[in-house]
Length: 564
Image (cartoon, rainbow, N blue to C red; front, top):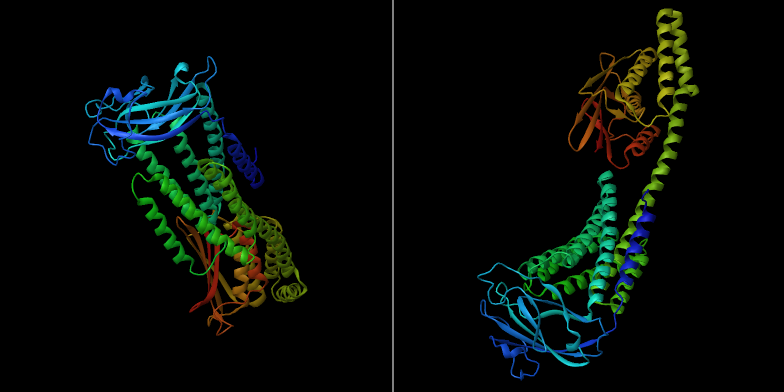
């Protein structure tokens, strides 16, 4: 399957739609009341009927390895169907035993023995509630816990009660959709990474690729809980990884927009924004929800400001991206935080993809224009070599040589025929071996020696015969050197071609040793020859080249760099 921007954007949009429709709300069958805590260990605290009015609503820290209890009153709004018991899905920091109306319904690890025994249990666990204990009305869920590894982290994170089988099915469906969503971003990330490697000057492409990869990694890390057993002692490490990915996303998205819609004092504002993000990232170790909300909100506000400024300045694409940012707010108001965060990020990246599509379209049009220009200039160059003025001067010189020295006249004719033959062979090619280009240059110097009776010579240094170059590029530089130079005192004009190669680029240095005609000018005016060279280089190398032509003590220096 051939990938292009349209198919990638469609893939991304499908992923967003799948995500937004994957987590429908199940009928609510319970209502959670307040949770209270008490340090100590007493089996009677598991009973349904027990006076816990003097228990604490919040405990900041538990003595190391100490047992503590929590009690949560839960109202069941509807009794379960026969043979379809309710399940209780819970995540809590610690190893614990769970009681429902005083009945032990599950055990997760070894509470109170964590210092002596290896870590056991999982952070996310689902238990079946016996049907006779899940009747409509008020019930009590009690936990006997110890959190040896994080004594300052007390309290439940999430509690869900629904049909036992549905809890597992919904989890499987949600995880499947989220992994399809993540896979979409991985494909997009790899695609744009290859685009960047093909043109390393396009940094917005790299930023977009990294953003997509971070979202992929974020989703995989968040939803790994559904199939990887995670003990609560390593959960904090997982949360740090999640927030690190989110930190990267929160900085790169506004940075990308700042490149697309530049504004004054951009560097200063980005530094201040980075400081704000880092501050949010390093606040209290357990304030992960506040970190997430703070970073996402900061990212949206800063991005909105940049894009709104771009829309105010009528920057191309800014208004559509502004719409995607506003849509992400609508999604947030219409759904939960987790789903809205991923859907919103997907919408924002669709806007970023739209801007990249505009840039790539501009590059394609520029390339097509370059091809047209290259064809036109190629014809102009060919005309230049067969124009009446060139032919008349050449034929006049040829008549003189035939009359004075028939043998040299024949050699003159052979050189002229050879040059036209070489031009015929190479003018339709995009790249030719450097050896063929040098042969063309030497043939032209031979003709010019007969015409102007000046000693021309071409020296080579470090030339790799296997290297390739657009046709007639060096030939044009040679012609410019002949046209814009006068012979030295010994009636000679010398040329030297030097080739150098590094890991980053290869460089051709073309030197002319002669007296200059254009005294006082540092560079040559851009005529047909230089336009032809630039068009040819753009056709073959895009923007990965650099050409300079300047005066030197010995005459002229032309330097061509071609980047890898």
